[in-house]
Picture 1: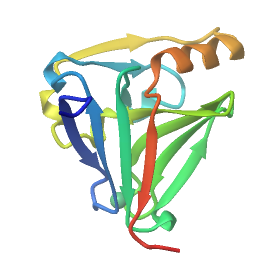
Picture 2 (picture 1 turned 180 degrees about the vertical axis):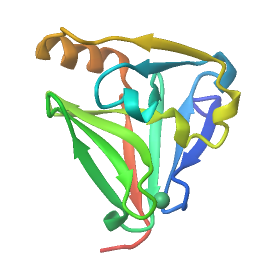
Picture 3 (picture 1 turned 90 degrees about the horizontal axis):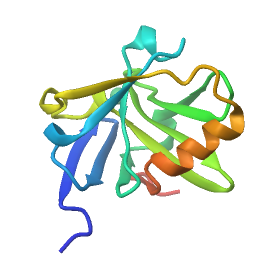
Length: 148
Ligand SMILES: [Zn+2]
């Protein structure tokens, strides 16, 4: 039996970047966090994460992924280079990689019922990094179809 009872598939619109979000709950029981920062708000972005979850990302080729950095420059917002859809976020804290799922990239986005608005303005950088290491997905695996 898997450590994670639920696997939520997702990816970008064109399918070049796909993922499986392994977690403990059905989407209807998960609260997505809506970020109010200058970067996320215009994009209507919301995110999922849980300290007891894992994100497995599959890309056809690493060229299909590109990263945007913004604000404190400590998080990579990962996009598909073909269709420009934001798929996930990664951040490195003390040598360990943490991730968030972009809610809109979930195939079953419509099943999400709970959204909470977060405001992290005024947070110091150490506070921000420690929040990530205590709330984000602690396991990000990347698989690439094109070997080499
Ligand atoms: Zn795409």
